[in-house]
Length: 310
Image 1 (cartoon, rainbow, N blue to C red):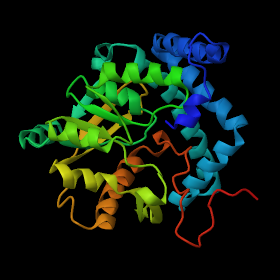
Image 2 (tube, one colour):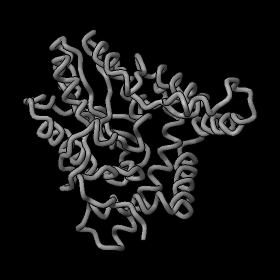
Image 3 (cartoon, rainbow, N blue to C red):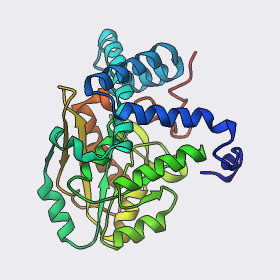
């Protein structure tokens, strides 16, 4: 979090400026304990409202999905856009559940495949770098993962200090440590110390942090840090998939074998390999991905933005 943004907020959490944040935290705590069917209904309703009234996010989502799934007709595309908002609305309630409740109460709802791949990676004794993905189930997936394996997490601090405090405290209850995404030394130190660190490299962090590599056939600014951490630590890089099943009541987590020949010494080749895994995982349940963010925000020199509205 930038100092400038942090200084925009009062120091005391009792300040009236935080009252709306306290209300949001309270609603999340209530939402975490709702009956399952009601959670799904409330989450879907939230997604429907955002789809109807937040036109900028709908435009971004439509643009992303049109670029990545050009084979879809307009009617199919419109359905997928709406389902994406519904899934991400449910994701708010899933996040609340992951942060505010003991994940043990969901053990009966999760199946975990490929655990032998993680065991083999841990046996190398060099720590593990886990590739997560920004699905709507991200934070609940982390809580469910903690039922089977310990891990740290790399995260982006929130600009609101109160919500940052709430979020970080919740994540530290799930993970061994919550590491600021800018703290490369902290990540490397934890991996070298033999820890597994969950890291999500599927967002656009700008030109300086990225190379351009194909993602759904489009040049996308892709983070170099994944291969850099692997090179600095010698840790295996483990692809992790997690999603809500079609019954909307159960979840599946799955480890795939560690990436081969990674890092290769070629940052573009490494980013391409990571993107290929992310793309494969998204194609299984495309509506559950966070298409609401501008994945293709940074363009190669001379290319116009995909997101300009005319």
